[in-house]
Figure 1 (cartoon, rainbow, N blue to C red):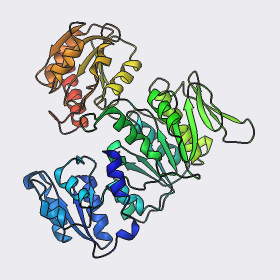
Figure 2: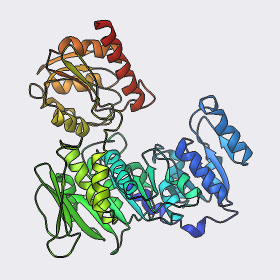
Figure 3: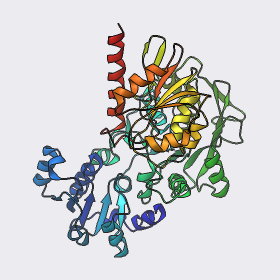
Figure 4: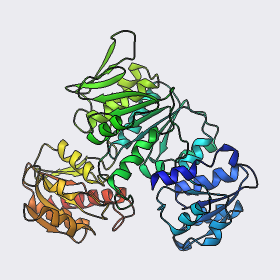
Amino acid sequence: MADDAMTDSMTINRASLRPGQHALVVGLGRSGMATARLLAAQGLRVSVSEGAPLNRLAGEQVQELAARGIALETGGHSAAFFTRSDFIVVSPGVPLTLAVLEDARRRGVPVLGELGLAAMLLTTPCVAITGTNGKSTVTTLVGDMLRAAGQEVFVGGNLGTPLAEYVLGPQQAKAVVLEVSSFQLDTAGAFRPRVAVLLNITPDHLERYASYEAYAASKWSIFRHQGPGDVAVINLDDNEVARLAAAHPTPGRCCTCGRAPGSGTGAHLQGKTVVVRGMGAGDHQEAYDLAATGLAEEPNLHNAMAAILAARLLACPEAAVRQGLAGFTALPHRLALVAEIDGVAYFDDSKGTNVGAVLAALTAMTRPVVLIAGGRDKGGAYTLLAEQAGKKIKGLVLLGEAREKIAAAFGNRIQVEMAGDLAEAVAMAAHLASPGDAVLLSPACASFDMFASYAQRGERFQEAVRAMGRREK
C-alpha cells in the first residue's frame, strides 16, 4: 500500500502547482487546513472533503474556507468531489484504502500528502526523524541543540506544527527539524531530507498496514529519495533496522549508531557516555556524558545518541549539543512521574500507544509495576507484554476496546482486573500496588475509543491520581 501511494504521488511536482489546477484536500485537521491555505496561496482552485459532520468542525475553520472561496463537503466523501480534481492531497490520518481514493488512483489522479506537498516548496535544509518510538524526543532534542547554537529553527511535522504552515511563511529558519510518521511517508512524494534518522521499528499500526513488513518498508522509505550529498542515520541495535540496512543500502552516506563502535562517521555508547566518531580530522572523537542528565537511562540513551549525531551532522557546535542535553526535560505523557502516594509512584506514559513503547517504558522502571493498559487495538503483539508477567509486571488493569484481547494474551499468569473507566483503573491499580511499587499508565493502544487523544488520556490519568492523593490526606 505504501509503495502504491508513493508511486502515485511522484507524478506531482512543483510545476503542478499552477493557477487553474484544481486540488482536493481530504481531511480537515490542522494538517488539512494548512494544506488548503498553502494551495490557495499558490493560486490553485481548492476543495475540501471531510468525513466528519459539519457540527463537529470548528466554526472558524468553516468561515475561513468560505472566505477563501474553498468548497467544503462534510459527512462523507462524494465521488463528484474526487472526479473533478487534478490531484488530491490527503491528511495523514485518512486511510489510503478509501474507495474514492482507490478509484482516483485507477483513473490516474495523483495522490500525495501534506508533507510531500510542502516539501516541494521547502528551501530550508531539513533533518527528518522517524521510528516507531522515540521520534518526538529526538526531534525536540535536535531542535534544542540547534537553538542553543543561536540558530532560528522550525520544529514540527508530525510533532505539533505541519510543515505546510512553515512553508507558507518567509522560510527564515536555518534548519527544519521534522518528526515524520509512517502515514506521512506513505504519501511523501519526492521528500528528500538532508539528514534522515531511523530510530527503531517494532509492530505498530497493523490495523492499517497489510503486514508488519509493509509497515517496516514504510519507515525505511524515509531514505528513498536521498542522494550522495545526503546522510542516513540508522540504529544498528534495532534488529529490524539492521536487517533492512543489510538488504537495502541507503542511497546517501550512511552513519550508524549503536552500543558497539562502528567504522566511519557515527556514534556508540560507553556506559552512559555517547562517543561520536568522524567529525574531525584523523581519529578525533567527542564524548558526551549523560550521567547527570535526564537521558541517562534507556530508551533515552539511544534517543540522545541519535540526536547528538544528527545535530553534529548539521554542523551544530559541540558546546551547543552539550547545552541542549543539559536542558532536557521529559516530554508530556512520556514516563512522567505524577506523584508518589503511600510509597507507590504513579507514572504517566500515555504516549505509549504500541507494545514496543510499553516494553521500553518497562525497561526504564526500577520498581515492580502495576500496568494500566488498553484502548483501541492497533494490532499489537500483546504476547510480548505477557512475557513480562511476574518479571517487570506484577499486576494488570485493563480498560477500553482491546481489554479482552490483552487479557487473553496474559492468561492466568498474574492478577488481571477489568475497569470501566480510567478513574476506576487508577483505584484498582492502587489496590494491587504495595509500597515500593510503581503504577504505570502505558496503554499499548490508541486512545480514540475513550478519549480525543493520548494527551487527554494522560491528563485524565493525572487528575485521577491527584484526586486519590487528596483523599488519602
